[in-house]
Image (cartoon, rainbow, N blue to C red):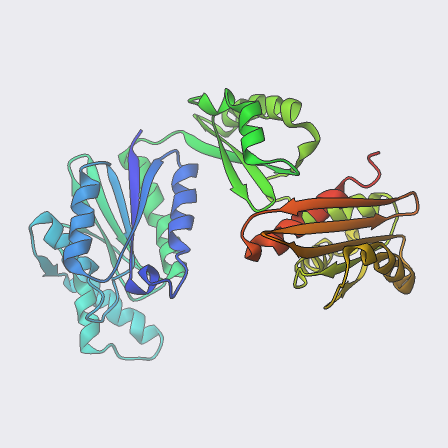
Length: 391
């Protein structure tokens, strides 16, 4: 099975001025096609550095995809950089110039002379017509290796990737398999504890199992390489059963499930209404529940009623009283109060949950970076809500 690398070209990406969404899109499409992706590189608009990155990639893999740098301006150097990497020149392709002119005519405009630069591609390259933009792309074949250069505009890149590049790769490399991934979301447990429980699964070759830790949440990724989606699903299911057995109630969902939606559904199942009271979170918990309620729409049934932000909280001991007052003020069944309060070098997260059945208090010491404390506190608050009614 061939392996691939992605080279994203653009100084604006390298400097963090814009977000590179192209690499993510390409990576997922390659995964679905069963192509191993080992590296992603970002290079500024410098022909020699781009050429060096290409030469290094050619030493490691069969497929190199570049995005960006195919525009008409001087700082669009991809065509020249690919030629430089291969020790050749660019050449003018009249048919590409005709396509560019035709594209402009459809918009009632005239191309400027610098647009003519886009009709130059490395000698011997296979041109790719771009029916949704003005930047032609190209493929350079080098024995069993290929360099494919795509535009940086996401809509143009995605169209050419889906309609030209992936069919080309499937045919050239006789691709028949796929790679499928599944995310298992956990809350209320740390990465090291999960690793201790499933370390043997992380040593598997196919499917593979990996961990990704976030603030207050750990994801377990299962990735299977197979000849069919059914076979991949069966391989993933076998590992997922082991994870469910070992991690139990720490698992709150899979793939696109969010903790806030799962928490809100738990309240809905009880037929209860909800308000939250927070201090020191900057609205993090309220915003997440509000967004989840909007996404769930009618399914939410108006369960999440309101949230209050308290600017000043003099003592943690005040939290139960304030939470009870919030519950009374908004006439809801459930109110969750959460406060992040500095405690020396750490920050303490205090939580109070009041339901028709109980009043419970929790204290969660947090010693990480202070700026992450609100997200961490929101995660733990939602983790408590999702367990409502479970005993």
